Image (cartoon, rainbow, N blue to C red; front, side):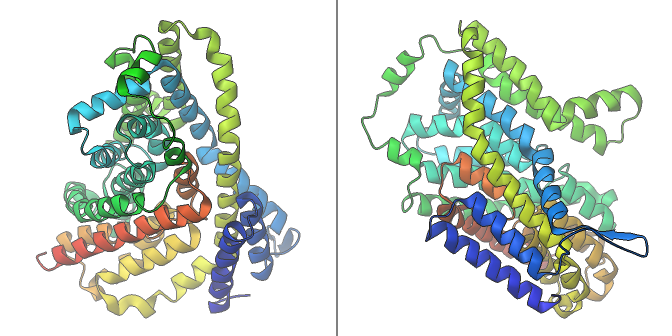
Length: 461
């Protein structure tokens, strides 16, 4: 199967997967894996490895295996370490302490805005999925502290992280797109435009977060409907709360280390300094350092004996998240191997008359088809680069704006083939069908609002 029929098959597979999960209550792991297998077979991926003229085409089993292991490689250990940090922060009362600190800064009346802005800042140097795992303990503590909707807080945090992830260097996607389009020497302008376009994206997402938070309840909200303890009772339950620095350290230090790694790559440092920075800035290593500081915090609280138990609890909790996330990776891998992205690329000239909307539409199509925002950013940039002159986007200012338009498309939309969808859904205690009403819709809102901002800026640039 090739061409447009392959896209139809993809749409049918996604709809069937959603129906299987929501209506027939089939576990998401089974539903996603089944959809990936059937789509792969319909797309013509061979049953076994086939070698023709020295070129080997992987069989469906190997494609599934590569997609599954790839998801674990990219996010698996990060999820485990981040969740362990969160478990320790909750056990020592540090998460509650951090929530209290946030409330003092943004006030108890605006926790949804506070967590969104916190996510936006953190995701400038940190990938959005890692950022969500790192900040989730604060989000949960704020939900308990303020009794605000857990769904609204999840959507706000997700949207804040996502905006800077696709718009603002030194995140790799925007940097790669800027370099491909010839705007690599103009990154300061790209960053400034990214900040400006973030404003309508975050505003639209904030409105939707508050709207959907009143209409959907997660398991967090349901558990909060019972007998509620007062702030004083909750604080008393932890005994003496940790200090501000040691409470922040397991979260802030990994963020700073990852930022250091991004800066080292961005500034093209050399020698031992670059090696050390790149090593410590790797998310797995940075979060491992965070776990060390969390363990110190646990020791100071006199609860070191609970470390084994807390680790065991964490692994039990993240197990389902890991496997569902890996299943999403399988679906994305099948789509990339099927030839769908190549078909969309070959027929991109059909969209070229759309001007500044062309890079947005193409990026959105690629994002929705294969799941990765970074792949959508880099692939679209490669397609658009030779077309800049014909689209009237070849001035330095409009080229930089094109990077942002591609970024807006690269967030539109996050669904089952995106690992970030499963991180947000599972850590946010949302059912799969709720994930489509929250994460998928808010990324659509963000993308459309961001593109509206791009269009307004294009009138002046």
